[in-house]
Picture 1 (cartoon, rainbow, N blue to C red):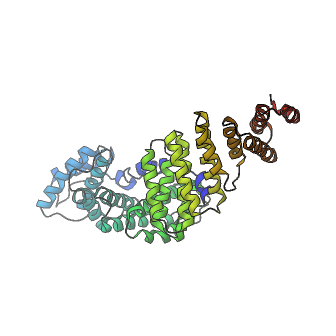
Picture 2: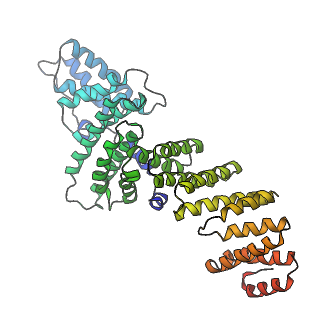
Length: 437
């Protein structure tokens, strides 16, 4: 599972693009024509309603919300109900939703009353463009849940239900289409948005495992599309830690943050740590620590290199049989040994290198390379020569050309350092094509 996660995209940009696209006005609403006053509607109310629709279609949401509010106040005072009220209620709720989406702060008023309820009440009466309206309502409930502390189980359930309904409605329109068809690709983007929302809910939900079946059922709808990699990634999350959805969702969040250059490294590691703390199976928890080590090592500072080794050790203690984890741990120790050697701390370099040869791992020739150099600097002739030769012989079995050259050069240097010029000359001759001096 780790290789699949390492290789596949995060999808954060797609989620943002979808959030923008689904917030645009409904085609059905945008096509609404100005209305004529009826026997039961005064001419000034009809004119105001036409102004509301025109303003809304022009995406002037601030004005649309203001005048829609005035129209509904008067309609309420006059006891009006029905489709016209439902249509203006939708405009009011949607306009307020759009305005809030552009604000960095939380909603200042009562989001449930001001945004969610107008859209919800409208949808109960008007079923035009139900896929769009259900997705919008699902997002409004999600915002309410998110800004309310992510603990409102009712808001979570309603938000999920409306998003799912929107996806099911859209599925009816693409039955029989190939995954590569343009209309199906658009459908796949909406499905991916829905699945990302499920993961977000699962990270905080007390009923996170309820989303397992949804991921297993819905993710295959995106196989074979342009987003195949991300759909597979999400599908496999449903089996992480024996179906522990909250841990899986947190782990995936950490992976996505890891690939986002804008994310704070400590916040990313905190998400990983939360996932590791609740992951039940040792092997899966070890994989989370391996990812943490891998991420910390890319930050390339002395403190982060130490952190990377600590995480790798935690992973190794949990799953020492994993080749990936052994390689991660060995590499982390090599980086510490190399850094210590470069700063003249030869004792520390030797200690880290000694630790890294207590287990086998792919690429461990660098560990013997580290041992030989540190031992040579400390005047420990036997160790330096033994480990220098072993590093060179191991490297010859795996590497060639420029990759092999440092191991050969190091061995020649150590031989010369301890007076074995003849053997050094022979090694130099057998590696003449490598440029060993």
